[in-house]
View 1 (spheres, helix red, strand yellow):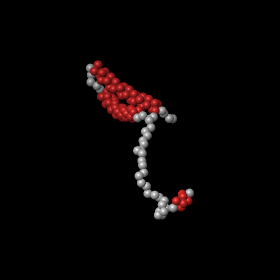
View 2 (cartoon, rainbow, N blue to C red):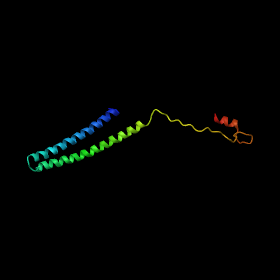
View 3 (tube, rainbow, N blue to C red):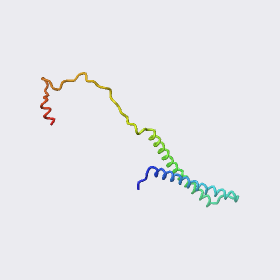
View 4 (tube, rainbow, N blue to C red):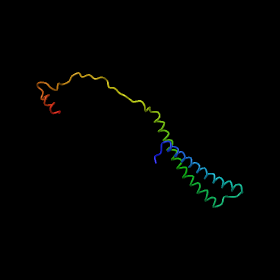
Length: 124
């Protein structure tokens, strides 16, 4: 299956959004656990501490992945900006300054070891 640039961009953006939502949900679980303990005027239990530690570890891993994807998105945006700044429809043409031959050694003359007829036959 071939994905277009637009589909890939939306897939990555959707992936990044999903990671951020997952991170937010885990953070909400930690806050809910702490708020419940505070409302009940008690300390968090060992099980709650273990859950908070596990969620914190998962959030750290998600943060690393979010940072990687965000870095890729930033690089992609910079590359697109650079590509847009280059005018692709213009063709660069260069011309050399006119040249003029001032002197040239004669190839065929009476004292030359070159023979025009021999060279012409050899060229065929």
